[in-house]
Image (cartoon, rainbow, N blue to C red; front, top):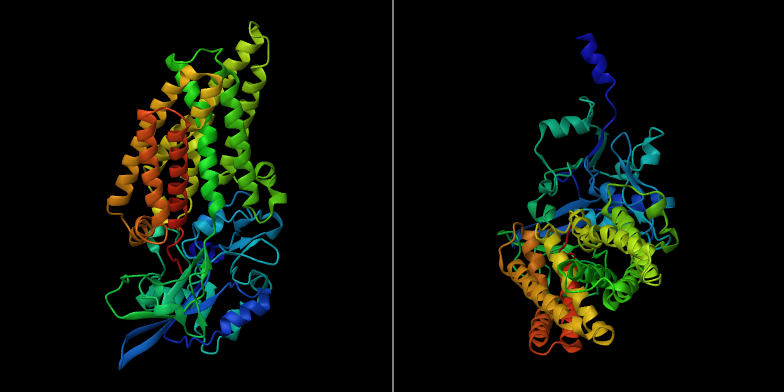
Length: 518
């Protein structure tokens, strides 16, 4: 018995928080104290209080939800951060280091609770960190100290005598989005389902909220459902803080340019192996690595331009956090770029010499897996964004591979018309065939029932809602381009296919981010 007690006493601290909504009065004291304690700028919040009006007159009441970081035991933001700026302390607190944050916003895309934001004053990711600086010196977080009704409790889950441990073990508590398997350590007591589920309540007409108006600001997401709420009870959103979607058109464009960069080399390599191109043909010898390298450079520029700290981009390679597919992708792209450079330089060597053949062989053997990985690694990067249900699709890797084949072959069609006209027909067949297969996958994505309400809402936003114009025009342009390629092989059909692919990519990337999470 003594040994058991000693082991229990030696157990590490495991901080957790309980928000008791049977006590919360929606006074915003916690939000104000948090801003003051942590010097949070205007327009962003580490914590805030959401209001939802439930029921109908005369039987109506206002329900509150205190929204903040859920301090997950399995935090997806930590896994996806490429530089370990988001990290988990030994006591379980998920903290951040602004000195190494590159502002990639991968943590924001990954968080199922929309608890992370980019500080507009320093460009680094930030969120509630339990006021770790106060806990470390024996003080409670600022929100706990200031709450007038003791609705916020903080304590050690491993301490059976703490109020938090007693409440979690004795009372009925809930966590948000347990299906994400993040094991949150923020527990809600007495919270209404219409507040815990971000799409359970209706948005008020006209965008008129309590104390504020929230119109259709570009790239902004507000809680509530635009149409039929995910709740049979009458519930109307009364007050909320809108959030910006993390990744804008630059990420949509990056997936497009990366697909071209991968496919523009991969397609000629496959045609070479199949016997449709000769090793000395100009399309393979220098045009393919040149086109692929140009679009890979554009991809790199877009990646860096999307960062809030572009000057720190080197940290992805110099201090990578290897669980992050953003870090892995940086290495893959860099290695692929080196292979393209080797291939292009080898094309200028003496045509009959052994060094040229050796360099081309090395480039071919190393380039095949790297080109394929460059095309598809984004599927795993998107999969790490656990917040975005539309991206959690097992068909995304083959879909991205098909996109690379159709994009690369289409981009090479006008180039081959100048440097090697006899290769245009083979490229046309690849482009048209890959486009038709891609459209079949997209048709399945748009028409099949998705597994979660968030995925269904995102698919609706893509096909029928906010991004319907991009989605439908993208499908139409791809279908028209494939038909033109088959009837009259040439640059017109290739341009139509590429334009349609970008429109679809933009709809797919942005629609997944249009579903409210908080």
